[in-house]
Image (cartoon, rainbow, N blue to C red):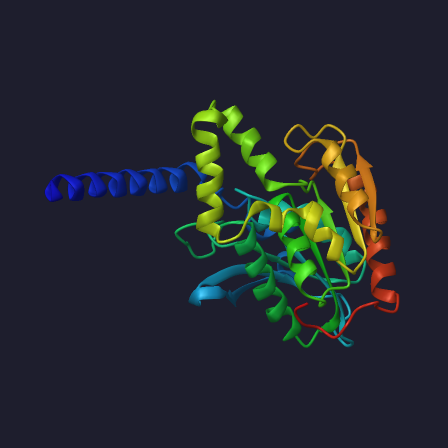
Length: 301
């Protein structure tokens, strides 16, 4: 009987391990190839410098640094974080207007993306850890005014930027592109597309993912974390977004008195849709950098 019980326990353990590995494989972000090398950033190659940034757990992040045009005086800078299954070069269209606005621009590949190191898994909280690593690197650069740094993120990268800003008073503004209101809803839509029935398997996947990342979706949902972000936040969302409905943007707007909403004619990607609104984005950042910061000393709240 004891042997039978041990065998049953071993079978359950093996089944759970198989499910764990299957979930990790199924949700793993693809490594999309970088586009056009340094040319993807829309500037002469000599203005862009490849950098290596230390990350959590002894890992390494690939980064691309565009110093501000006036290197004589420390200037404001913007850290740019891509979305799930993307990479830094796919955020290239935001670089020319930010650089023309007088900002330094750092673009990074999150772990498990682009040229950055691999991990057993990545997640929105790990994207936020990578943002923190990028910010630490930025503050060490002599061309950067350490108290005048903003975040710009897309999708999961936007949610991670909001998560970081909710925990730290060390950025002057956040630009959120195509952010979702709640990660569980994104997961449910993803599983529905894969025809994974929630009543049978979906609930287990959601619970297991939260156990793996070590935090509940409710705790890191942008509609919650945005309520404690004290810096100005610009929410940019495409009216034709079929990945994250525009209703999510309205929910986020309602969550914060420091947020404003810019709706654009575009889908979830927004690379082409942002061009006509580049002046609005730059003006928002300039105003945030020039205003007296309503922030406490940098640190964790």
